[in-house]
Length: 419
Image (cartoon, rainbow, N blue to C red; front, side, top):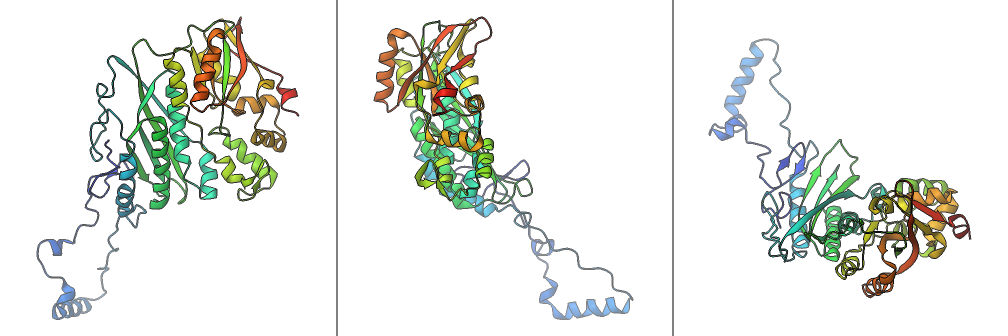
């Protein structure tokens, strides 16, 4: 595992404008008088007095005192804080090591040995994603421990829908002012997400950018690479009418639709510290920050058993727009909202925001974080494998013949979600 930012034994280098990495930078060079051995005038009173007398006798004093030398710290970038974060997160990244990671942290790039990981003729799959404005809730609540899990989940769940095993992960963390403990908590969550997904945190980048972000604000981006043997990727081309659609339960809102979530919270007049109206055991903020579920282990087990024709990660676009991405031409899906319970958080969002069922369905996961398309005769087998891996599944729909582009027909939402 390597990274210009993570694990370098030296203070962090500047990449681009303000990014903190690992090459030492001479921030404040000594004045020329100190470098070439000349004595500072402050140590020689008689010389200083002579200079003053000559200046006074020459008439008006010129402006001989220039501005004080600047430091990078005065510009808002704390190199020492960057080095402290590197030290704090190095063991967190190290704990994610897996077969195929080929080097320790500290270089310019990460190495991964596909043969050592057990692959013979692999196809690589790459994804990238972020957490969106869920970060605003995390910042408002000063709760940063789970947001890194969200970041990993948003990337690796997109990998697994191709049938790929996640192998490595990198992150980008940008902030207006680097707070070491906040950064450590974020990266600890990223490392936990990597362990859940079975991939290695091989590197990352921390950028302290004063003026670009407010001091406490930050943004995250993640990058994941996975692989599958040639011929073992899944793409949905063998889907046909009569196949079943299984829904895998979500853990909550996950990481999409938070601009609307925040608007609903604002309209409700509640603070994030108030008891959640839909779960009085916790605060509203903490309930909304429940991390995105990582579906890697369960879905890969079903994929390797040959049960899965296609998977769809339910992210932006909700129930309506994600499944069509894996359906072939001539197919559509009927999804029956009466076939699973709408979780309380979505009931509250719908009621408090006066959201129409279609608006709810095309914005949020509505309790279904992943969909799987399976043949009818292997549905029970897929359910058994997924349940053994800890998933709660529902038979939420079926594939039908379609005359247009692939699409989802959502049935019974008005009745099922108005109870």
